[in-house]
Amino acid sequence: MNERILIVEDDRSFGVMLQKWFERNGFSVTLCSGMVAAQEELSKAAYRVILSDLRLPDGDGIMLLTWLNETGLSIPVIMMTGYGEIQTAVSAIKLGAFDFLEKPINPSLLTQKIEAVLASTKEAPSLREKPSAAYNQQREKEHIVFGRSLLSTQMYSYIDMVAPTQMAVMIVGESGTGKEHVAQMIHRKSVRSGGPFVAVDCGGLSMELAPSELFGHKKGSFTSAIEDKTGFFMEANGGTLFLDEVGNLPYGVQMQMLRSLQEKRIRPVGTPSPIEVDVRIITATNKDLEKAIAEGRFREDLYHRLNEFMIKMPPLRECAEDISIYADHFREEANRELDKQVKSISPEVLSRLESYAWPGNLRELRNVIRRAVLFSAGDGITLDSLPILSEKKKEPEKEIVVSLFSEPEREKEKIIMALERVKGNKTKAALLLQIDRKTLYNKIHLYNIQL
Image (cartoon, rainbow, N blue to C red; front, side, top):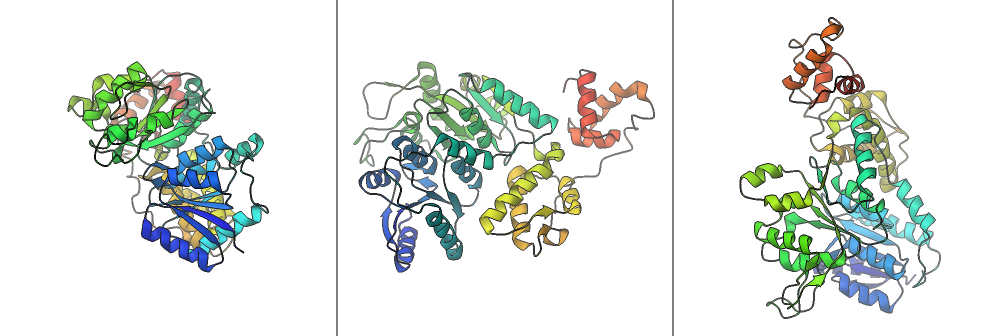
């Protein structure tokens, strides 16, 4: 066979294990420990497949994909992801990755993925053959699904409204609601869509390393600076910098961030003069930043700089009418990944899914459907293949509010009572009022009830 494969993996022992596995199966393998080394190797030789870790010491898989697109290298990329990185991996697929694999790697599944890549590319790709725009748009359509609930459609309208502007956007919502997915949508709909989209997990930035990671450094500026580093701001120059969980940004770095945003210039560690950068900032958080400001953990001036436009991600429990749409999308995704042919989800399963609280939101729903597809013996997901959903919604306190139908002249008063009783949870309020959520939303709008 002797097909050439490039492995990009900073875990040396794991990378060597993969290398030996491929060599035993007749492949010619090159192992690189980071993105820069991979770029140098790809500039010298052609490869049939790239197998890359999503997180690298000098970048990530998203940045590698962006570089491949910019340089015209149309080489299929399979991303390797750890637990909790699936959403980012899906984002990578939207940028052109062929597929992704979860660690620990299943050899048989790896074999299937490699065979699928080779079958889809009969000839070694040209070093300057770029994927067509139509191909990229088609891949994007295949991996995007839109909710149809009132809250979801309202959110999409806000995305369409703010995307063409240069405003800094803050996306707030519970974990697992798809904040990075929304950030990607804003980028794709903006005038910066042709530029890079660089995602940064602020929770992984320590006080010591954050200035170097964000702004870059000069070789020799500190002990471990063995080479120049670009930094995330320069990587995103001309595009969008997405700061995930921005509430975790070290307090000491927040002033540097504010100054960089105000002046539109950065100063890499160890350099005498600043460098101009052109980036749009999108942030995301599942924390109460106003509380963090009151406690002295987050700068108020930085908060207002980042929060020029806020998009609130609705939790899945408040968009129950979207659950069937998302579940069917995740069923198709799991079929492709697990090589299954599960064609439907039973009404009983959908009813169970719609009555569950979903503390993990879309991420949890995806995992549940994925497991159900794996355990399905037939061509449909039934209750037998559904995992136990232990954390159910609490029963509504029906005695406090009488049905709207008994005294329609007191509708507005009763709606306000119900919303106050359940602290603004519209799903619970609708149950108390014995109406569906859509009716409740319409009446809130009719009576101009401020939440």
